[in-house]
Length: 175
Image (tube, rainbow, N blue to C red):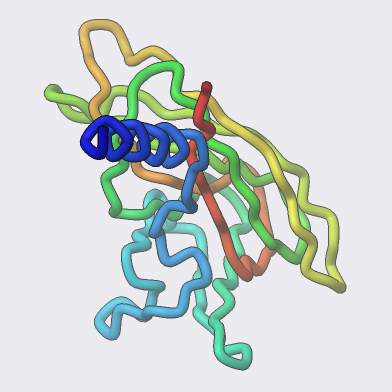
C-alpha cells in the first residue's frame, strides 16, 4: 500500500512539473558580465559591424544599449536549449527606444545551422522602459537538415536605437 501511494505521489509531482514551465537561464537581466567582451555573460553579437553596443550600469542591474543606423544586427545567447519543430516559447522583453525588433531563435542540428525565426515587435517608447510580450514557434528546419537545439536571439534588419533592460523566455508546455 505504501509503495502504491508513493508511486502515485511521484507521478503526480512529475505531471505537475511538466505542466508549469520555468524561465530559461539566459542571464536575461544582464547581471553577469564577460570582462573580455564587456557584454552580458552568455550573450554574443552577430552581424553587428554597423551597430554600437554598450553595457551601462543601472542600480544593481545592467542595461544593454544598441544603436544601429543600418544593416543587420543580433544578439544571441549561447545556452543550448533542446527544441524541435513545433515547440512554442513565450517571451517578455523590456525595452526603451525606437525601432523594430525580432525576438526569436537560431536553430541547429547535426548538420549545423538549420533555421531561424521569431516574432516582430515595434518599439516606440523613448522615455520609459516598456514591456513587450509575444510568442514564437520553432519552424521546420531548412531542407535536408534537422533541429536538436536553439539559441535565443533578438535583433533587427532596420535602424534601431534601443536600450534593453531585460529579456525572459520560457517554453510553453502543451498539456
